[in-house]
Length: 300
Image (cartoon, rainbow, N blue to C red; front, side):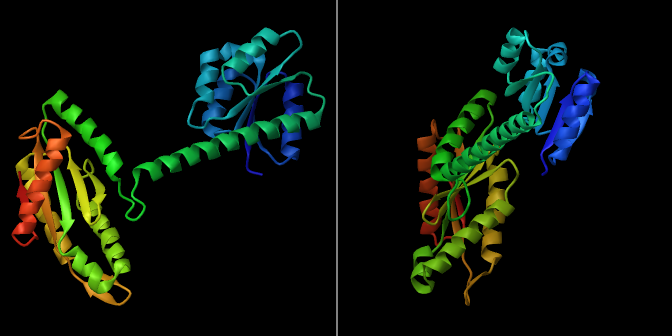
């Protein structure tokens, strides 16, 4: 058992009983006799559960208890109290404590049950947060390439336009299309085509700046958002991307092929007043790049 429990209790007899019982049950246990020592060990030990005396919790303040509960460690909290302290118990339960036990703690089985239930709740919350995070990734990521999807692009573009207007800083977008992709799919099959799309995404991610974002635009098209970028910088980035794509060998299941790409670019706020105009200009520039044979970049 790897669950860690921190006990903050100023009555030595209670502290000894709790610690011995939990250690016998297989928990990792640390002890503290006051609030200051408790906070120090909390930071060092990163417990999954804090068992704390009510009076110490009140001395540490409700705000401090709330900060412990809402920290990145997010432990569950059990209050140790005595008969007649119900109003204070209720206040602490309202501010993040999971449960309470009355002193003296005589029933070891009850103690272990409360601890087990608190830790199960914490694990359930952790799994729920992980699931929410995974669902969010599914909502904003393209399943084939792992890049951000078109829906998320719309959101990011709106945010970047607001930021650009607020700080009077231009930004640039690229729409990138793989040249002759339909012919490649027809000759080598869709599995090879999927391999190209995935590797294309990897090439783009490796050759942009940390502030830039890459999206799957649809089909064999990709999109790059380049914040705070003027035309000269954008041209240099585009030429580097075209070179990296041109020089990269694509091999899959015995098939070998090289590809090129075309890039259409537009700047905000040069000619566009909103994201729809910005995308239309970039797509228009892309058609010009493909119209001259591809493997180049055009700006609109």
